[in-house]
Image 1 (cartoon, rainbow, N blue to C red):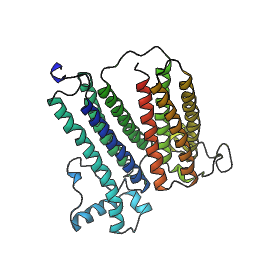
Image 2: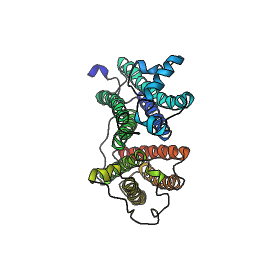
Image 3: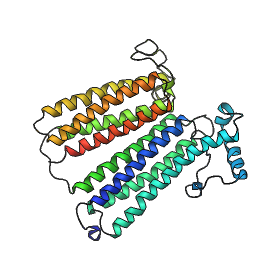
Image 4: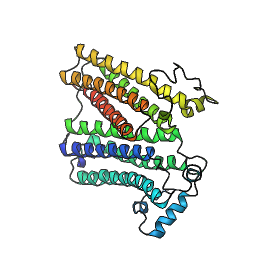
Length: 343
């Protein structure tokens, strides 16, 4: 593997990885809009290569529309929709899938080029291979998610949506971390302090909160209980419990919304405590303290956006902004966790 090594750091590789992270973020935004417009089931087959070509003739469109008419979503929600209305939802899903394909190429082609030029730091070669594999897995999981809505449901399974979104955010965070490693060079020993563990715990809490938010989205739970801080005037919604534990955790609208609210309160308290504690720490350098403060402010902003999105019954623009700020919060947490591990 030494032939791959020219330097322990590479600004070009860091910029490339950061650009791919931006593409992943764009996929998250387009995916959110696709879900909000109920467009995700408009393409009923998975063709990783030939699917990049959309319908090009009236016959192609008629065939795609006929396929859509065979699934429960059409029969139960969209019966009688026109071809033009179908095209509107089709283009959302096609754009989301096309962006996924372009993101894969934007990773693979420069990666091969950087390997040929020996610009990828040796310690990051196999990590980049893993990132590409994670991106491929994301595509498979995306189809697995869509398939859950083609037979017995009118939408995708919320738990599969959570896994799909969780993988996207995991890939996004890993790209940012790897870009930082490529930019800064080999890791240096950190001063002994508890901040590495605290930063990791905060990052995990943010990721878990994103998963809870995905369950809210998958269950359309943002369309009910639109008061705050109570839920229909109650502290604890009376319809919280489902038929069993799984039905409660993954499929109860009341439960997933309350769980997401509680997660937000815990996360906000933890982020503000970390921001305040960082300023008082004798272990952290000034840069890490700044990142902690910015992260705390971002979590506070995200909490406010979440409340506004809920009380306005999830308008599309605000919901997408809420999702993008979640990505910004995760990115800040990644940078903070990375920074406290370096002197």
